[in-house]
Amino acid sequence: MRFPGIIPAVTTPFDADGSIDVAGLESNLGALLDAGIHGVVATGTMGEAGSLSTAERRTVVEAVVRAAEGRIPVIAGISSGTPAAAIALAADAAEAGASAVMMLPPLGYRADADETIAYYRAVTEAAGLPLMAYNNPEASGVDMTPDLIVRLYEEVDGVVAIKECSGDARRIPALLNAAPGLEVLVGGDDWALEGFCAGATGWVTGVADVLPHECVDLYDACCAGDLETARAVYSRLLPLARFDMTPKLVQYFKAAMDEAGLVGGPTRPPRLPLSDNERAALLDAMAVAAV
Image (tube, rainbow, N blue to C red; front, side, top):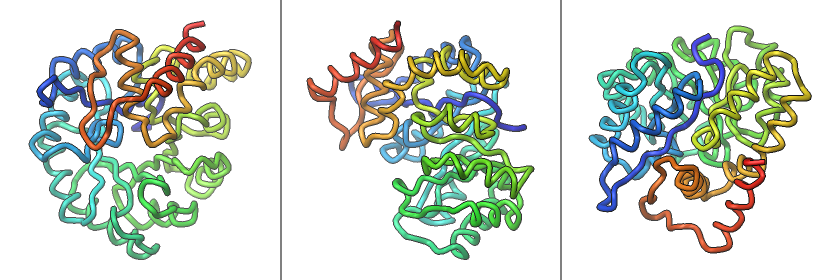
């Protein structure tokens, strides 16, 4: 498998002046590697990709690749509104050393099935890197059903995996049965245990930015069939993990990273800092995880 295990979607730390904190990013990667994670996604939603310039995206991917030192795959998010824009981002990611790319259906337009297939085909033919498709109906406005994902895998060379973020664990065995060679990864933090038990091969996760050891422990327990241990670990993770499925996931996890002694830092507008009530809820969740 190309993408097994725990794959944090890393945040992009910023300095007080708003520039990318490269040293902080590399420090965070070191902590993730020490915890035993199996890969990373850079320049995704968690990385505030929508607020980054093309040059900044390149800086982030280069820093992550440098910190990874070839030990894990580095997947670059390239979600865009047009094939040309995604292809340009993929070329930049490849030059920066990324191992693969990840992409939603076209942003800003509710593509039908044939248009979605054509979009992915155009990008994969030009990108030259393995591609992880990304199904997140809330973020993209397009729900790639299992039937469409199977078509994507069978008809588009280069599509090798799917990050499934519909929240429906039933789709995982459906995909694995219909497309045995496709790698199916959980894309939502509040159904990781269900996803692994349904057969998911990996987990693209935000909570692992804060609690990587615990996420690796969950994966290892699931692989070993130790459901009792998996449930115990997950019960500690879940209150914090649930913030992943909220609009303010980046603010929550960056604040949690700061609390955990990592480099979270500020977010870029339009994201604002957490309110007092939101921060109190975050601290309550972190207290559960620390038990």
